[in-house]
Image (cartoon, rainbow, N blue to C red; front, side):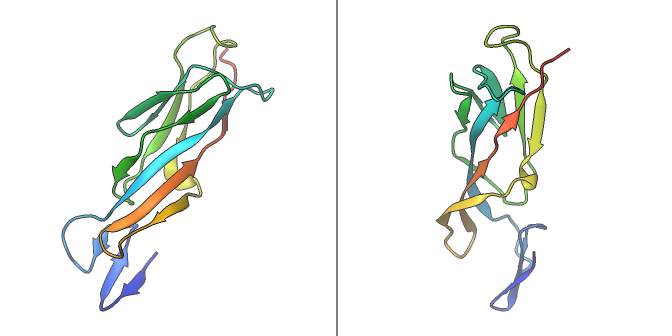
Length: 130
């Protein structure tokens, strides 16, 4: 994505703003639901995004803390069953690259280095481990 900003060029995919050193930043939060193949929620799944770890609740819901990252920083959400057979069985791990998710802007940026606040909704189905 390349857009003219005054005489400077902005490219979030390459983290270049008019040749200026440094990177823009955004606030991001990942939230969603983890279910099994039958659609039942899975409690106790560990979700890791960047430096944040959270766990799914009894309804399979989770929400990371608000993280401040460069928008071109490729992050992955990791989903791991860390409690074994508890909470419905043993499930295979999975992951989702955040750049593959359509993010939702919830707060505008300042038109300069702060790009805004975004939510990344990820509802995922985990398969039973063999």
